[in-house]
Image 1 (cartoon, chains in turn red, brown):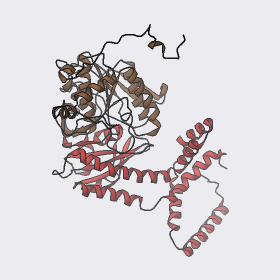
Image 2 (image 1 turned 180 degrees about the vertical axis):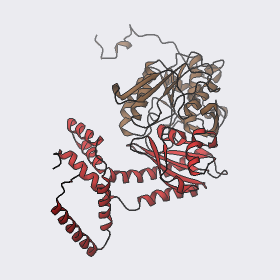
Image 3 (image 1 turned 30 degrees about the vertical axis):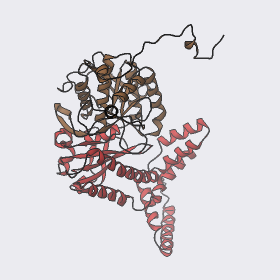
Image 4 (image 1 turned 135 degrees about the vertical axis):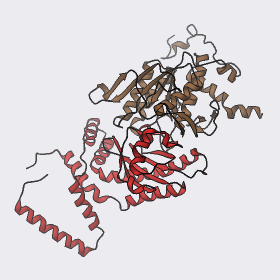
Length: 250
Length: 275
C-alpha cells in the first residue's frame, strides 16, 4: 500500500494526471501558424518560439518556421546568456541589427543550426502570471520601416502566442492551477496560504499517466462503437492486472 | 488648539520657508549648461556593467543580487567588481556616461543565470539603491507578473519620497509592466531621433517620455559594440539627462524634475516656437 496522502495532494495528483486529456486540439499547430504568419508579415528569414524550462535555466525551442527551422526545434540554449536570454530575463523587447557582433550569440544558436542571422528581433512571451519564453524574428527584410513599429506588431503575435501557451499549460499543470484558484477564492488566510504552498509543489503529470490521458482524449473523438470496444479492452486489462496484483501502485 | 495629524508642519508658527527651485521660465541653458553629472550617483539595475569598456571608463561601485534559498528573504548580495552577463547593462552605462560624463556609476546586477526568484531579486536590487543613497536609478527591465504589483509599488513610492529618481523602460508587450507604469517613475519609450538630448513628452500616461532607442550604436560585451533598438536604450538617455540636471540643481525633487523635463521636451519647445 502507498502511504496515506492528504486529500489536497491527492486532488492535485489526480488533476495533474488527467489534465492532458482536456487539452484543446491543435495547440502545436496554432503556435506554428503564429510563427509562420509573423515570418511572412516581416518578410523574415525565420521565426521561432522558445520556452523556459521548469527550472528557469534554459530556453527550449518548441516551434520554428523558415531557415534552420528543423535544426532549431527542440534545441535548448542557456537562459543566462545571449540576446534571447536578456529578453526573457528583463521582460523587454530588443532588436539587434548586427547579431554576429555579439560573441556569445554567435557561439550558441547560430553554430548549432548552421544558420547565422544578421539581425534579430526578440520579444518576451509573458502573462500576468509569469514569463513563458521568447519569440524571435530573424533577418527581417531590410526595406521594412522603423524597428519600433515592427516591435509593436510583434507584440500582437507575442500576446497571441502567450495566450495559446498559457492555456495549454493550464491543462498540463491542472493540479497547481486548481489549488491556486481555490486559494484565491478562499477568505481564510491560513487555508489560502496552505493551498498556495501545496500549489508551489504540486506534481507534474506523470509521463505514463499523461500518455493514457492523451489516449482517452483521442478516444473521445472516435465513434461510440469504437469507444465501447476500448472500454471492453480496458476492463479486460484491469481484470488481468488485478489478478496479478503486483502491488506496484506508483 | 490641537491640529489633526500631519497638519503640525503647516502650523503658522512652524511653517518653514522653502527656497524656490524652479525659475519662472525653464530653459536648457538653466537646466544643464556647464553641467557634467558630477556628484550624482546613478545606478544601472541590469545585467552588470563591464567597467573596463571604453564607453564606461570606470564604475564607482558594484553589487550582484542573486536568488539564494538559504539566505534571508531568499536573496544574497555580493559587493565588488563584476562583469556583464549579457552586454545590456554596459550599453546602458555607456549611454549614461556619454550624457553625464562625470556622474558616479554603480552597477546593480540583478540578471543572471536563471529566472528563479526574479521579481524578488529585482525588488532587492531596487531596495539596495535606496539604501545606498543613489540619486538616479536606470531600470531597463520590467515584470508583468501580477504578484509583484504591490511589492514594486511600495518601493517606487519609497523612492519617490526620498527623491531617488527611478527611470524605467516600458515594455512593448501588451499588458501590465511594473514598475514602469507607476505614476512615481519616469517611464520611457524609444523614438527614432538620434540626437541624445532630443526627448519628447507624452501628456497621455502611462508612458511620459520618448528618447532615442532605434538603431543605436551601443557598447556591448567584450569591449565591442552593437547596433540595437529597444525602449531599454531610451531609458538611459533620460537617466543621463536627469543626472546632468541634478548635478547642477541637486535640490530638485522628483516631481520638479518631471516638470523640468516636460517643460524642456522637444515637442513642447517646438510648439512654443511655432506659437
